[in-house]
Length: 363
Image 1 (cartoon, one colour):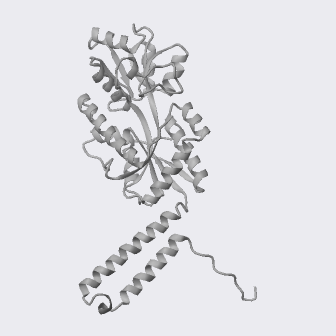
Image 2 (cartoon, rainbow, N blue to C red):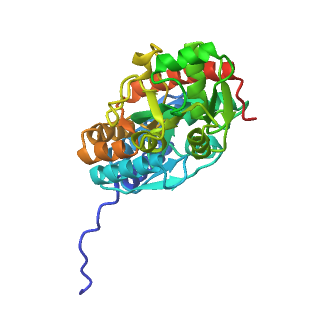
Image 3 (tube, rainbow, N blue to C red):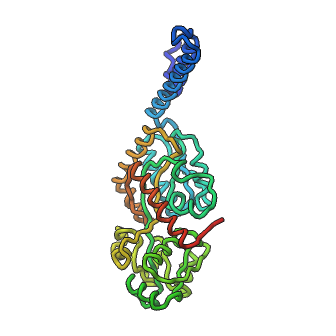
């Protein structure tokens, strides 16, 4: 090449900013005390202020270039389930919009505690995010005496994603074809109707407990190790009713093997409009769903939070996203960071009351 080289490429914004920050600090350290303030203590204060400015400036430049590498999305469920399907769809849409991969990191187990702990203590730079939900940010904080994370203090809410309503299912031999008839039957036979759930403290258990409390009925909880075995006993007539997600409930009702009396969301689910909301069918004000949202660690830069939220806002209008959500029983649910933060607080308050009244504990 005859010793001739082209111009050096410009470094990435984060590296350039770091270099400039270091240069400014070196210059400040060489300025004589009298030139700044005349007093060593004042000089130290001014240097600290400049340092804070440089750090803030660096964070701003970094946020402006975000993202410039792949993003990790921690999902507190094993691969393959309905929530994982939604997470992978969200990650695909984010990658298309941001030009960087969003890599799914499945960390199931302990009711989401393991995943939430990792996410809560990650670096708050926008490259580690968390798919939180009704378990991690509504129910679990009340089931454990001590958690390694605080659902409010340790996270930055970004955006709601969707909710998964549950269906109130009865065996066809039960003499109830509506929610009101089931309540009347339970009131006439206190302590004689059994309902199943996926286990003590599970969302399905507490959804039924909220129903019990608001309907003022006396029913018996039978916990199982998962929703599928509970459904098996409901089909066999060992249970009278249970709440189940759409993936378990709708195939059975549409085949005529079980009867769906109501859905747990405030309104009818768009993918099952034939099933009335429990709130309209006998228990006014009733609402209990599984929900999912995007969160980052505490002190996620505002520019990063805004970029992620605006991207999710566009995803809500995506036809494929809406269609795929419906296939796994999820209704897209929008909410900006402030609305999401308030929603989390309201969910924590609601489920805290239900957990206390039910006596459910994990440890």
